[in-house]
Image 1 (cartoon, helix red, strand yellow):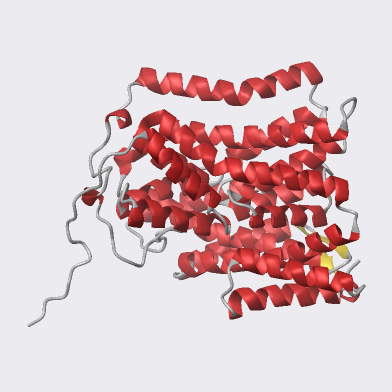
Image 2: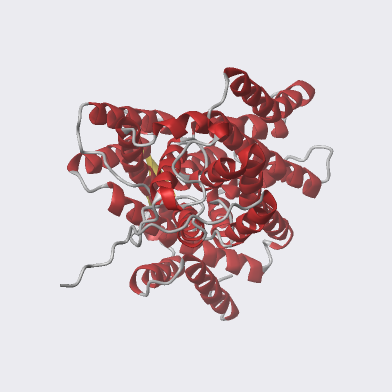
Length: 465
């Protein structure tokens, strides 16, 4: 009789590593982090769990669950969390900063190219192709998350309600997410199983047990903080985040573009739950419709940049801040103002991420296996599917149609497409990108580059101007 091999065979835990050695691993993760949060989390899982065995499967998912409940980019926060687990605060800073740095440099360089050469035909055609492909990429992300999150009827109902509320009624995004989290928490507390899921990062391969990893199963000493340590952590990171905002408000006044960038993106850092695509749906509408920092097609161009560069998709906020300050530079040279605006948006977006991790992670480490927290997470993920669908529809309206018309009837308010204004070239390129992603199983970066190349070819033929 043959005995099937077990996937949980005990292995010798890996040797401890220094922060200097970990630096190069975090840098490798950063430069490979393409494809949105799902792809970035998959890269971290493959390297940290399967390859390096720094952290086990269950501990990885527990950290991910906490990060998905936080406002901001969950992949960057997950890197910060694991870096903190391994090498305390210094490790968290190294992991979190490296995760952002390559994308920040790339987006800043592309922002300069965009404002200096964006009206040149070949550059315009390049971004036109990116914009068309982004529509397919967002739709794929919504379907991928939905496939995992909407396995039960209550989850599907929650996603549908979220879409209706945000698209047709304009309900505030934070209210939708908070309501979904409370529903999931209440359901789990009552023993319900409607909202159960594993987030983005569940592994289908060999399970790496926590006991067989570098971190093991025990709580590290720095996960047992005193109240004094907690207060000091809060004060330091709140000062790093809010003192620059207060300084700008005091020195320049609330109506200055830099003050508005600081306050708007600081607000986003507190309320944008549910992942990058949900965040971008809200930011795009506010930055375009309320602040008029950029046009809808420019928001799509920025997301195309973020999709084709490493790091969090939320790095598109740097592009938004860049354009806002560039176009309202005051006495500063526009390029300098744009650079400062982009860096300011990045600072107030990501500094709070370190605050949430360093303040909350020591307490969350003690909640591994909490069913109520898992229920809240799964319900939020279901609602995010509906919010992400809103983003896909918003992008489609501004990509495939040259004009829309507002519809208002009681509480219902939305933009409807004017069918006669459809752009056949955009439709063809977006359809080709969807075919590559769904039919050929091409990667995100390959699809974006291929669609941009097709747009450049059409530009050479005089079809795309």
